[in-house]
Length: 219
Ligand code: G3P
Image (cartoon, rainbow, N blue to C red; front, side, top):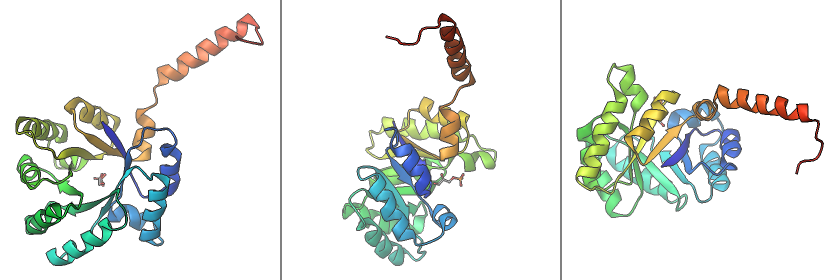
């Protein structure tokens, strides 16, 4: 299972990239806007930190032909770039064209099984179902993820499922349980997910007991 950091924050990406568990980064216009500065420079910096990672960069144009042109330019930034295109039916035509031209796409803002099926048929690299935002409208995001996973397996589609809008440790847990190909998380959620109070308490107890022995050199 691939783990991506859902951010454009260079400091967070640097921190987690050294640990060997991060397979890439997913940015979006909100993340880049939050960082300020020149978004192309930020993307280049991220590419330097993770030269072998998969870096998703989203289109910002609206008109389908403008999205197509922009997607090609974004893809040209590097071999490890995936272009995020919203899962809107007016883009199906250009998504199809981009796939034929070997542009790696991460289709974003996916909310239903049927949208997922359409994107799998078009052969995109990833679909990103938004779990937290489904939960926001009282739908069960993880349940939808299970349905999408079942569909992908049932029809043997090559498109990967990248669970996005994951805001809690429970949601992260649910993505693993659903057996998806990848998940994207904020550094904050990842930080919470890898910590357990019993691990910390256990370490303290072992340390206290060990000190009672009074041994200075071991082994
Ligand atoms: O990358 C897109 C996605 O993860 C957004 O999450 O929390 O804004 O719904 P959120």
